[in-house]
Image (cartoon, rainbow, N blue to C red; front, side, top):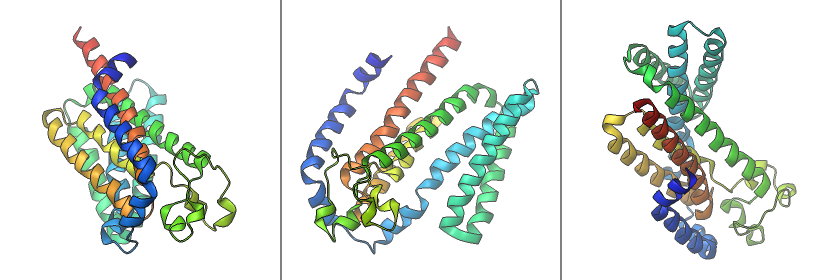
Length: 270
């Protein structure tokens, strides 16, 4: 499976190596040139990037809960998926409230009701259960990987080292706690890799649920990824290499998920 994935992703791997080589040399120059802390573009995606990924999580957990609730065969899975669905709902609620406060909560509840109703009425829902589990594990794995690397790397965000260039380190330098004592907010040393870019790239997984409109789903996801990644550099929250790695991590898990789903569907046909 690994050899198959690597062979199929040769162009993507080549592009990653080229971009990484370029960003390794020009990371600091690019972010200094593009830095615009008052950018409305950057501020918008600072608040709203998480929402599409959160609804992907909510959709996946809702599919699982509705499926096991209808089957009434395994009460443990019923309660587990209900718990996961509740967690997804509250995570999405948190980010919606952060973005739109009171109005956001009303809109969030309406969207959640639509998702739940659509899942209940979905005739083909049962055929997407394994896909939902794969997407759920993909999201969790990608997010945990990024959070772990943030703690290990301890790279200072651009807005801080633009004021004091001595804080700048290249992406391959592991700092851990080296700079933490210099800042009041621990978030300042969590530049590498980009969490927002990671969340944005996970929206590629929507294509697993919209088979008839797969190309459109992928196209929208790619546009969203480009908008988010550029906004993070402009807003001074990340270096280009940060967003490259954040997206690459999510894309790696997405690719594994895609081939896992493909193998699952081929097994069913056989």
